[in-house]
Image (cartoon, rainbow, N blue to C red):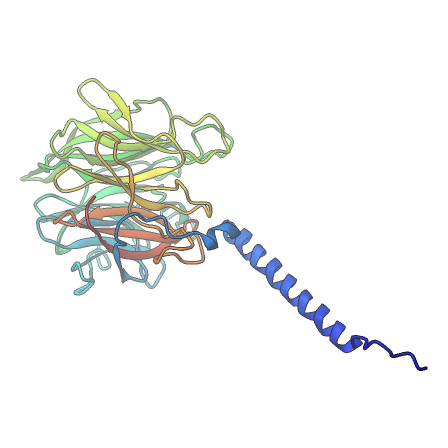
Length: 384
């Protein structure tokens, strides 16, 4: 009696199964590598967006842009962005991005070539103060880009670009520079950050250089605009200081950020503080991670600022809090994989400015911090 043979699986089918398994394993490894590259984790793919309220409406006003300031008086946005030759210039546009025009492109008073950036409006809407590079002594001017501010002075421009006035005259040195000027609500004072020692990556708190908070009276005189009674402060000792705003209801209180709390050279740490000019006391508002670019809402009930909290891919997002540091609320989720505004790369929401109504913010969203490039987004939201 013949023995019945059991059917054997074909070698071809076994080979297909192995090939399919290898493909699946390869895709898993590729996905893991992709998440490691962007700094996230595989688990984030399966998480829901943690936003508790409605998502803001985000519109890109300019695909290329930089630091911003929104005039409450004129309802116009001033900003900087690279021109065709690579140097930053100051532009003004409507809140919808229309009627875009350059203010500094043909200014004979300013050194050329040279960067001009960090514009801020006088409360009257008649003037803009900004930082401008001194006569260039190298091929690129990289250290004078608006985010770095070396070898730069403060200048004032008429809003239509018809007149320019130099406000400071610092040495033409990479150890000197200015950043982020801001007027008081009454327009009679100006604050800015001023560098007196250049960056040193080996020295604690000097990775960005040593800077001071400068405060001066501002006035338009028959001889032109002038600064007087200038004072310099290092309320927490030698460190990096960046000025952000005067308090709306108290012009003797300043909002600033600093890395003064750092205890390790390699750490990336920066916090927000209030400085009372009456007695030089400080109040710390944030305590972990990296915080910067903080601004009061028009009525003064909120502060918007950038923070890297809860971002595994090392980007930063826009947050809101009360002026005493309470009610900290995340507004954007550019760096969360399951949220609508996310992109598959770290984004840094940096300089920002409130619109007149207090329900929208224009922000510089940096895509490359080293080259200081990014776009300008308009963020419309429901206030908490």
